[in-house]
Length: 543
View 1 (tube, helix red, strand yellow):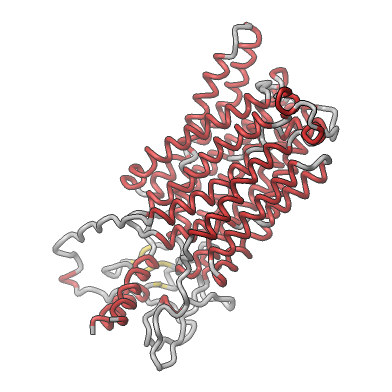
View 2 (tube, rainbow, N blue to C red):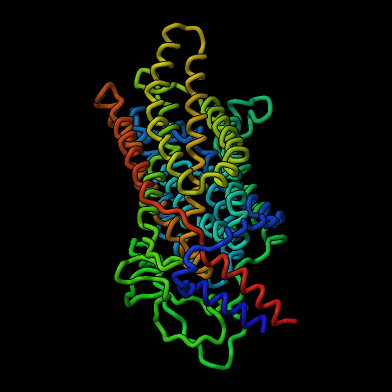
C-alpha cells in the first residue's frame, strides 16, 4: 500500500500535480524548508582528487610554453608567438569537442567509473609525451591525444550530481572549482620552477644529459603523477554512481516509455523539447512501475501550444532557455583562456606586456589559484544558498569586462616601473588587484555547473547532457585561444589603439556574455525528487 502511494508520488512529479480547486489555489501553510542532506564525504574527496590532477597537467606548461616554442625556432619574431601558442591550445580543445559527447554517452551505458579511469590515464600519458617533444608537431600530437581522451569533466559532474540533492548541491559543486583552483596553484609552480633544471639547478641536475636534451621533461613527468594517482585511487575507493536499470522491478503489464527528446531541449524549445523524430527515451526507472503510458507521449505538465510548463495552480510558466545557458557557457570559455594571459606576461613591456620570466609567470598563476581557492571555499557556498544560482551567476559574469579592462592598466604600470627603475611594486600591485577580481568572477564556473545539472530531464541523461555542455565549451575553446592569441599578436604587430585593440574586443565580448545571462531562469531539477522517492519505493518493496 505504502509503495503504491510512493509510486503515485513519482507519477505526480513526472506528469505534474492535479489542478487545485479554485478555493484551494493558495496553500494555507508555507512548505517547510528541507533539512540539509549530509554529503558523502569519502566519494566527494575521491572525485576532487581525480579532478585535482587535471589542472596540474593542464596548467604546468603555461609558464614555459612560449619559451619552449621560441627555442624550437618556429618563429624568429616574439610578437608572432601568439599564433603558435593558440594553435596548441585550440587543437587540444577541438579534440575534446570531438570526443567528449561520446565519453559522456559511454558513461551512461557502461558506468562513470571506467570512463573516468580511462580519461585520467590518458591525461598522464599525454603530458608525459609533451615533455619529451622536441619539435612543434610533437607538441601538437601530444595535446591532441590529451584532448581526445579528456572526457573526465562531464563524467565527474554527472557523478557529483548523482551524489547530491538540491539541499547540498551548492556546497558539493563548489568543491570542483576548488580542486581545479588548487591544481592551478600547483601546476604553474611545477612548470615555473622545474623547467630547464640543468640550467636553473646546476648543482643537482647539471651534467645530466637527459635533462639537457629534454629541458621540459621534469615538470611534465612530475605533473603526470597526479592524474595517475587519481586513477589508482578511483580504482580502489570510488563507487559507481550510475544506478542499475533494474532499480525498480516493473510489473508484468507492458510498460511504455514516454519519449524525451533531451537534445531538442538544448535548442531552447522547452524543458523536454518539442516532439521530433529523434528522441531519447526516459529510462524505465524514472517512471513508476506498472504505468501503462502510450509511447512517445508528452508529460502532462508541458503546454505544447504555449511552449511552457503548467505550474502548480494551473499557471503556465515559460520553460528555461537552455540554449542561452550553453551560449553563455561558450562565451565564458572563449574569455577565460590562460593562453592570452601567458602571452601578455611573457611579452616585453615595449610591446605592451610585462616582460615576466618563467618563474614570475608561475608565481602569478599560483597566486591567482590561491585567491580562487579562498573565494570558492569561503564565499561561494553561502552566496549561492542566499541568492540562488542564476542571480549569483549574473552578478559574477558582470565582472568580466572589468577583468579585461585591467590588462592595459597592468601594462602601463609595468612601463612606469621600468622607467623609474624602482622595482616592480606597481606592476605586482595591479597584478594582485587583477587576480582578485578574476578569481571572484571565476566562481561563475560553479554556477554554470549547477545550472547545467538542474537542466537535465533525467538522471540517466546526466552524462550525455554534461557531455553536450562540455562539447559546447570545448568548441568555443577550440576557437577562443587561437582567436584571442592571434588577435593579441595582430594588435601588437599593427599597434592598433596603441596595441590595445585586443582588450577592446574582449571587453565587448564580456559585456555580451554578461547580458546573455539575463535570459536564464532559476529552477530546481525534478529528477532529484524522483530519485529520492524511488529509493524509498525500493526499500519498501524489499521489506
